[in-house]
Length: 162
Image (cartoon, rainbow, N blue to C red; front, top):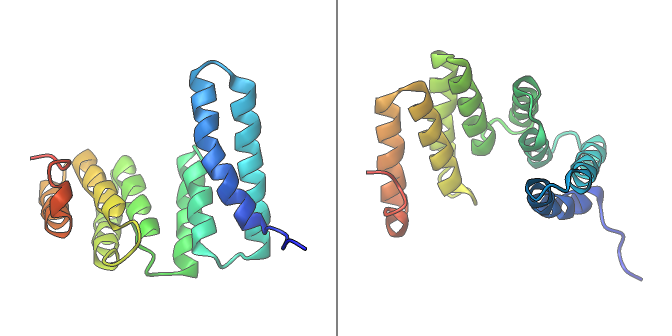
């Protein structure tokens, strides 16, 4: 007898399908993409109700919200569950940069880079921090993220801006 898939597993499946939903939306098939997005959100909320202390679920949910306040709330909840989560710090740095909050941006930026070492998506975290620093106009932090990205990922240095 096959083991029943958890809601988190279903949510991961739906997330991969959400890329398909976005392409359907771009092709003009709006109904299919909206149904898939609603299914993703339902699965993530259900997974969250089963395990509210899972920072991955909070980050996935934050990635799917479009409103900045809801996204920020999800990433703050992820930090409550795991204060050293670099993905949540990087996304909060991006949100703070959008809002123009330099003090909160600096704190989340520094912590994201500090905790990202050895994390499975370390390169993405560095790029998010670089993007947020550029958006806020913080040249010193942008330069720091750029140097760190080149040092940790020398094979991808062609991808990073000069």
